[in-house]
Length: 83
Image (cartoon, rainbow, N blue to C red; front, side, top):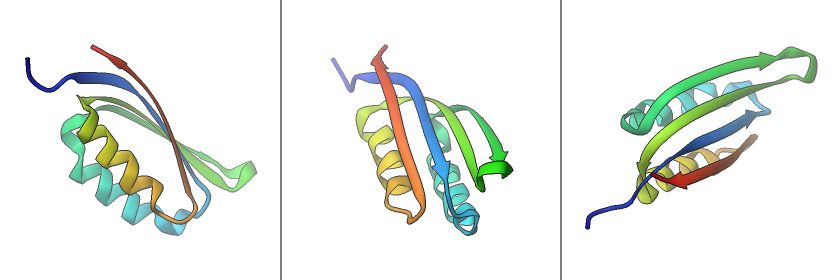
């Protein structure tokens, strides 16, 4: 039947803005699963928040969240449903 696709939301909280180039490189590398992106600097708290809408296989989305989660000062959470 093929690879099961999922749609969902990924929340990324960036505590260290110096990591932005790494984060953007990973997001570009996985652009085929990203449907939409919104980024907000939260200056009062000294961090930034990115929300992604994604559509891809479990492996594709897992690779994206795994790479992001391995960056120091970056926290990642996802909520996915089967489509």
